[in-house]
Length: 193
Image (cartoon, rainbow, N blue to C red; front, side, top):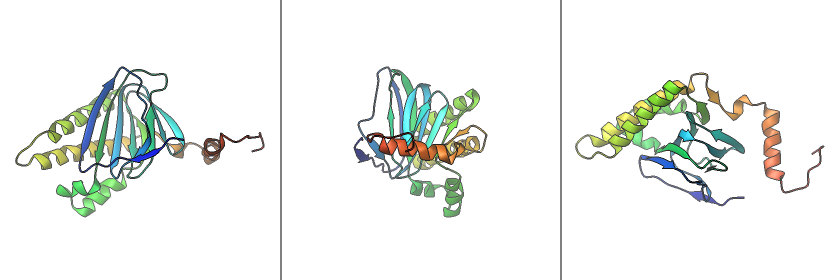
């Protein structure tokens, strides 16, 4: 079993990574922020809630604060992705508490497969948010949170579509069996087990 680590972020963290080498995380980890992982090229394997998801171009995964996850390359050597972490309280800079609640209530953990058009549109939102995150000066923080807000609203529109791939669409008996195997693979199991 992998070690577990906490990775904290003070405000908004956005990172684009393109790699032509295998890259496996050293530890499974969690954040005190929401995290959006957006696969742009190649393939990554993400482990979340005892399920391994294979992410390819246009796949998006959302984690709420304190949810353990881990990613690795396995047989794939090339990938490109965006990762964005944001704190709930940061949205208070542009939203009321009620607006923030209504937004985040729809921001559920899931894996979403986007169409090519949605992928290109979301990439533009990520790029715009990243550009605003680097600006300084008057209103720069509000502009960055405004870009983040637009990105989040677009993701919610995609989530409300029909491309959701989540453990909830798999029969509960299958998920229970997968969890049992993941937790007991080191023990000798019989067919009855």
